Amino acid sequence: MTETVIDIHELTKSYGKAKAVDRLSLRISRGEIFGLLGPNGAGKSTTILMLLGLSEPDSGTINVLGMNPTREPIPVKQRVGYLPDDVGFYEDRTGLENLMLTARLNGIPEDAARERAKLLLEQVGLDNAAHKKTGAYSRGMRQRLGLADVLVKSPEIIILDEPTLGIDPTGMEELLSLIRKLSREQNLTVLLSSHQLHQVQQICDRVGLFVRGRLLAEGDVPSLSRTLFADDPLLITADIEGLSPALEESIRGIDGVHRLEIETVGQGAAGQQGALSADGRCRLQIRCDSDCSPDIAGAIVGSGARLFALHRQEYGLDEIYHRYFAGGEPHGKGDDAKRSG
Ligand SMILES: Nc1ncnc2c1ncn2[C@@H]1O[C@H](COP(=O)(O)OP(=O)(O)OP(=O)(O)O)[C@@H](O)[C@H]1O
Image (cartoon, rainbow, N blue to C red; front, side, top):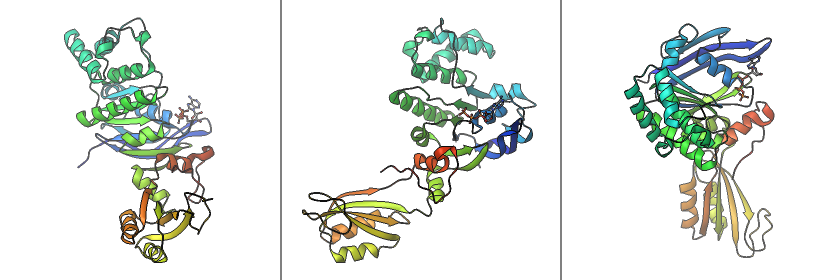
């Protein structure tokens, strides 16, 4: 059975009349990577501060590793690592010295501190920069050092606030795969807030979508997209040559196919519907309620037509996010969402 390590129930926090967090309920399991997503002011940071015992809820309950962070902030802090978005280091000291300082502050004896710091620098890929002053580190290196820094005390949960902010795409990719690797190897629970949707999607087991202090939806990306796009079936596009009435008929007859539209492509085509281009090429746009691509490909090839490309549109976090947050407001199911092809 999976162990719940973070259990939030009906958590509410207001600043004056404004509710920063509004009846938030959420459970996170050990070893899970959970992404907190939402526009500015959604309540992500306020939630994180309450999880760390740095801010007191107005009502509701929070349980972190069996503890109440408001009443037991110190034991929670010992077992939960936090990487803020603007991590600070002693710039005139090396990466190794900075980590050893954190180790000392956590009561780790000198020899063990050095060993731990060296091991962590190796794990985050900074062993070559161990003796370089952190003032000369790039943003990506600082974030990796920040990750090593939160891991010094061997936490069970790490909370990362916008860890990929300001890092170039390669550095971002490396940092995220490092987070995933560490989480999987050490059964480390990771809670991360981010706006980098595409990247978050790659590493998070589950995401929660926040807006105005409320959790609008949570789940893994495929199940969220199924719920959100339930009235907007899957789109499969096929570029073919040699469409016949019999092929049209057989595609329309495939179980799960809702609608078939034909668009011209290729030489002399103007993208008009229903006509073939001079070279006989056309694009079939097939809306289905399940993935019918194998049956569609089979029907095309079986009819003697030539298949040039078959593409299945995937709804990812970007589409989900835009549907909820376009213009900073949650949108309903019927609204247009920005889609990638
Ligand atoms: N100390 C504070 N005093 C007054 N209002 C605050 C305070 N901290 C946050 N708020 C307000 O609470 C709401 C939630 O803010 P919070 O910082 O938690 O959002 P966020 O999702 O973390 O946003 P961001 O991505 O910009 O950090 C916002 O309306 C914010 O203005």
